[in-house]
Amino acid sequence: MKDATLAQVLEARAGRTPLAVVTRVSDGTQGVVTPDTADALLPPEAVADATRRLAADESGTVVAGGETWFVHAHTPPYRMVVVGAVHIAQPLVKMGVLAGFDTIVIDPRSAFATAERFPGVRVVDLWPDEAMSALGPDSRTAVITLTHDPKLDDAALSVALRSPAFFIGSLGSTRTHAARCKRLRREGFSDSEIARIHGPVGLAIGARAPAEIAAAILAQVVSVRRGGSVTG
Amino acid sequence: MTDSAPHIQAPADTQVAPADEVLAQARRWRETGQAVALATVVATWGSSPRQPGSQLAVNADLDIVGSVSGGCIEGAVIGEAQAAMTDGKARLLEFGVTNERAWEVGLACGGRIQVLVERVGESP
Image (cartoon, rainbow over all chains, first blue to last red; front, side, top):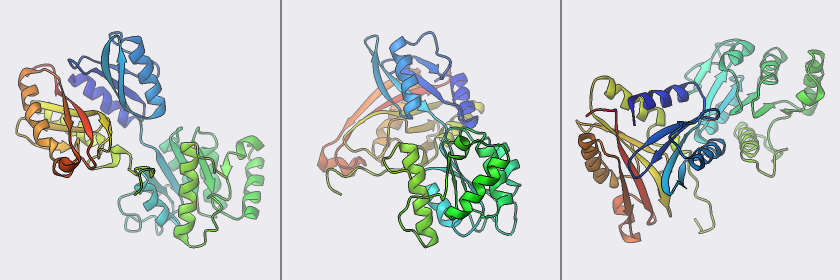
């Protein structure tokens, strides 16, 4: 691997952009494929396979032009953004980390958002819209609001709804959610935009304890991400 | 676990050392002018603890970051990595293990694994 290729991979990973390194296993000949570009030295079948693997989030080999090539798909890690450093956030964040999510907690109330309560997780104590805009939710980001405080939840949701986040969920009863939808409509969001919000967030498994509610939420996020049959 | 049960694994990138850390360390070594080789799992058959794309980087002092298996093939991989640092040639290694030896070499349940070893950087 050339030093320049190594630098390119690290830059793509840091910038959360997908990039595949495609290597001929017989001699290490190497090229790079991104969703928009491909090294000219790579056979078209290898480029097509790399493009498919970037979308499918997997690395593996392909035979192209009579040779075996290894496609190493460097895709950005999935992120879980939890708004509200509340009680339920503690088990949810732990579960998110275990499930492989790059997990971030947002809460401007610095008494809640302490590193001690969320060891090993990035805690951001900015106002949610500011924090969310800085994070830039992409199609590999889930956003879950837990605060029950419209000032905080709505600020996060207004950024999330304008982003391609693959999952948006809000904690709160059906009545709370109806009130939330009404406020968002007043802010100018359409019904179909608002319908992206899973609310009340979490699969209906009869969860009561905080860890149970966290499990219901994580299960719903996983199901949406993996195309599971139960998402509502 | 029954045969039909899926193997539950965290994404490869979250195991042992994050992928970023392996490659970032490789670059730090290169920036200080060190010879570096990179080993990458390219294919696995049967049960294997590390998925395609798992990487290990090693420098000439045999400092190691990352992993390509649960353990014992690392020794053989590092030997080939040293050779790659010297001659600049990429090599494809294959390890197959029987069930009996599976635990010994760190490949649970008798897997087969292919590892590509390459030098990082243009000149030795």
